[in-house]
Image 1: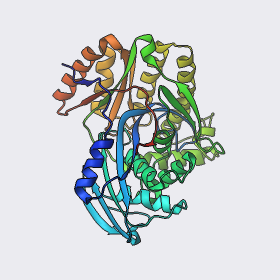
Image 2: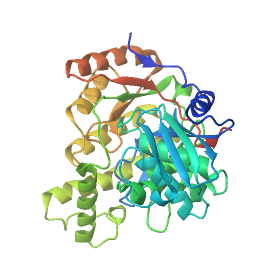
Image 3: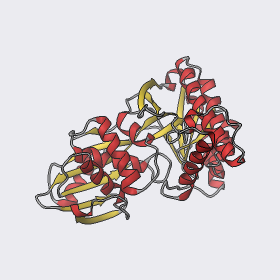
Image 4: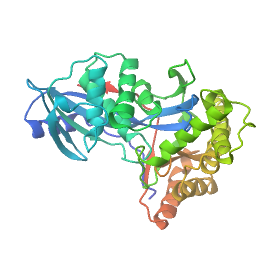
Length: 383
């Protein structure tokens, strides 16, 4: 057996409602869900003023909330346990297990929504540290349930980005929160982070199943964190490259010949070529040229491995095995240094390819998780 999870993830609304009631003894909480995401292509381009093409996953984080009459905050997580404090604890640069949730509450309050005492229960289907935006999904779910429809979708995106960048201090570019909230079913979201574009989003129909193909997401089992140094270092290097080229962001660069530093030149080359690959993937999807989509996925991985240097042995192994077994293309996805890869493959071959990937990663000492991943809808209030 390949272990590919073909069935859609179950709706956890009833389960988190029951868990909330067991924790707090309060009936009828409001519930919101927000999905994880997988980036089809456009890696490390969001904070560089470029293009990205993510989809929302069927796997989501859920948040159940009921207000209190005092200023006490009680937060329980299905993964990390219990935290208690007051609204006075809502401030930037929160640390600890509840940091992402508290960052969301702080950012919603900063956006103009009054946040008083409340009880909040959160749980998630998104693998933590997998490069599938588990932290953004959690933030977006918590922000959505606390905002309760009082923020527009765009304002909810902005608040969720602030929650992670200012509330937690993780240097995310905004892709994750945007797709978690704005995605629609059977569509990828083409995001433009160029200067003055402010995350302009277009919907691109993404339905490889119509041509007999499918997208397989492989969680390598190697964990990463945006709060660690590698992601931030690449961002700093990109900013240094842009400054050396005399542009505000690498998304505006074309001629890289002025870069004397070989490391900065490689970083810039990845960003510029990756933005071009996003455009070419959108065109190939529109033409139903799935073989070209696969080739561009693989080219993206090689660039991330060699020029941006954010891959790892396990991610490289996934791509190598998938291509050897007949996949159309494969690449690491997310920030890198672990996490996940995606494989575009004929649907008839997915189990066989999955078996080969599991065998290789098991030999490398990790326990992978394989997810069948159709494009799903963004955040919603479910109750």
